[in-house]
Length: 187
Image (tube, rainbow, N blue to C red; front, side, top):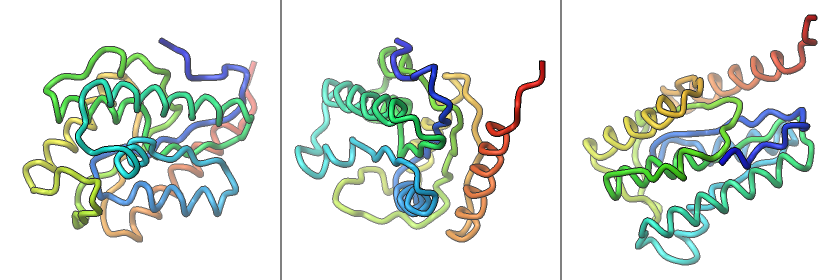
C-alpha cells in the first residue's frame, strides 16, 4: 500500500507517536509554528470532536485513510520538514487497543522517515476525546504504540520526562534529522 510518499520530495516527515495525553499535539503545534513547517494534525481527534467517539473498526480505517491523504498532500507541497501529529501506525495501535487486532491495511501505509515515541509519564488529562486514563490502560496503550513501530520496522527515539525535558529531546531529535538530511551523499 506504499501510497503515501512522494518519492521525489526532499522533505522529511517526523511523526509524534504514542499514547494519549503525552504532549504530542501541543508540542507539534508549537514547533511547526516556530520552524515554519507544515503540521499534519491528528484527524482522529477532529473526527472525535466533530463526529463521534463511538468508534467502530470502519471508522478507524477511514480515519487512517484520511490521515494518510493529508500526509501525502503535505509531502506534495515540497516542504523540507513536515511534522505529523500521528499517522496510520498510531491508528493501528488504537485498533489493537479497542478491538484486539490491527488490520493489515493499517500497517501497510507508507511510514514517516522518523518517529518520536512519547512515554506516558505525564499526568493524564481528560479533554472529552480521550479514552484510556487508568494507569494499566495507559501502560498497555503505550506498549501497543511501541509495538506498532517495532512491527513496522521503523526507527524511533523515546521522548519522556518533564515537559521541558520532552521539548529539549524533541528539538535535539529534529535537529539531528535535519542535519542528516542536509548532508550531501558521498559517491
